[in-house]
Amino acid sequence: MNTITRRLRGRPAGGMSEADNDGTPRSQGRIRLGKKTKDLVKTLNVGDIAVIGHCNIDRIAAEDLVASGVKVVLNNDPSSDGRYPNRGPLILVGAGVRLVDFPDSDLFELLVENEQVTIEGSEIRRDGTTIATGVEQLEPGLVEQFERQQAEIHHALADFAENTVTHIQEESELLSGAIELPETRTTFRDRHVLIVVRGPNYKRDLRTLRAYIRDVKPILIGVDGGADAIREAGYRPDMILGDMDSVTDQTLKSGPEVVVHAYADGRAPGAERMVELGVEHIALPFVGTSQDVAMLMAYEKGASLIVTVGAHFNLIEFLDKDRAGMSSTFLTRLRIGEVLVDAKGVSRLYNPGLTVGPLMLFLGAFLVLAAIVVLSSPALADLFDLIWLKIKIWLGF
Figure 1 (cartoon, one colour):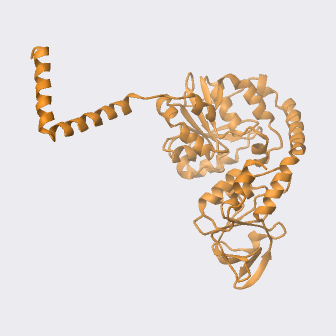
Figure 2 (cartoon, rainbow, N blue to C red):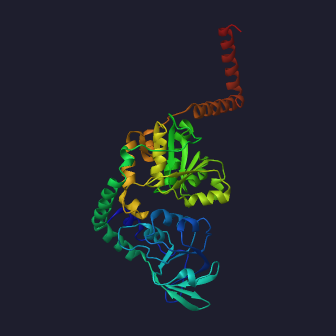
Figure 3 (cartoon, rainbow, N blue to C red):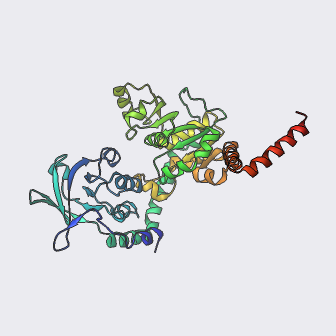
């Protein structure tokens, strides 16, 4: 049995729900509709019922939903379609959030934003009348499905590898070709660059780098919503790069340089949002993911070290992002490999040791304590006066 299933077995599901006399779980709450989970979570409140359209709920989406405090998640798509072992449903149910799938209903037509409904078992009830019936995802079934998918992961891996190799031939310019980049006001030459992506453990890894950020002061680049994570950690991003579909308006308006990742043909949907917000920006057409573009920009402009937080690189992470291959990421890492390091490596390798600040603070506290002890004891005070007199004689005062 794998780590996640061992950890989740035995944890209570539906911790915020009541139950009818026959034991059927029953929850009441306010409906919040959102086809994009990453946008919806920013508006959710504790006790809400989230309605999403998210096939194969990924780990980041599940963690964000749990953090929002929702009691129930109603999914208009399969929370796991069986293609690969996605952890999202297990994370939700393991945290006590009820998860009900409605792949055969159009919840976004049936339900109204902010209306109060009751979720009884797998049914949605409005004023006592059942308006839709789904399938509740329970922990035993999810654990069994997850373990089965892990045993069959080689099928997904084979398809993924084939797509990767096919696209490597199409995107080979990433490895050997010249890359045209726009002029930026951010100067990268001989600087460390920290790139933050909303990926696995990105918040925790960012916290582990506090000493590194304080001492080295790297350029901080947020890839889309990663810029919000930088601000939440108490820093200011120097640059935001991405398609701008998940970063908040407040972060965009906070003053960093904004680079909109556009399609190779020049179309940049994110640029329209920048115009509406009145945010100055640069459009950068490029193949691959936004995290690839951020790493290549830093490398080509002369960064001495590139540190990534939350970057995607394993099979599950790419499938969670609905990507059938990783050709651009593979080629990007081959091109910039000698200056690239993951945040986990920095947190293990970078140990600043005892700095002057804490040492002086300790010394000061010790002297204050010693003075209090001396002044409170006449005998020690006399001894201290004698020592001080001898010191003055020795120094010739």
